[in-house]
Amino acid sequence: MNKKLVTTFALAATLLVGSVASAANWNGLANYPEVPNSANGTETYYFDKASQFNLIDGSRNYVFGINVVNMHNNQYGEATLFKYIVHPSLHTVYRFAPDGQLYQINPGTNEFNMFKAAWKEVYGTEFAFPDVNAVPATVNVHA
Image: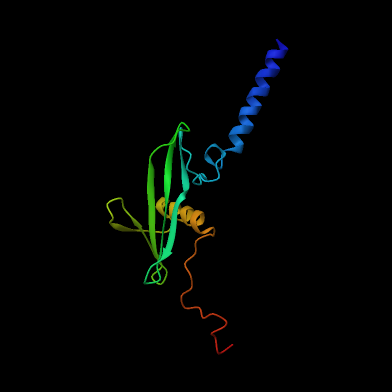
């Protein structure tokens, strides 16, 4: 009886360690990091790093995107493109809807939190609007 109990605890501990180790990435794959705070019951959302892109358009706006995959019971689910445009001089962020329309997202909303998580995943930094009025030290003649 004690041998069965010890075996059960060992198996449970192994499964627990395995689930903790892969909590940040889907099945431990570095290409699928978890979207922060996205676990909801049997569903969890993961970024698909292979799909990410970023560029600066002709108006010096940031345009970037990444697929987010909905995993249900740890099975690969539907991917949705999260594509954004950031207007630094206007301090505004827009998301492209699936039909191609733009809509503004505002700080303090869940959508803006998702945007910040996507920004961090694509650019590797925390998001902050740049100070467009700041003069670089190399250009400042009054210093």
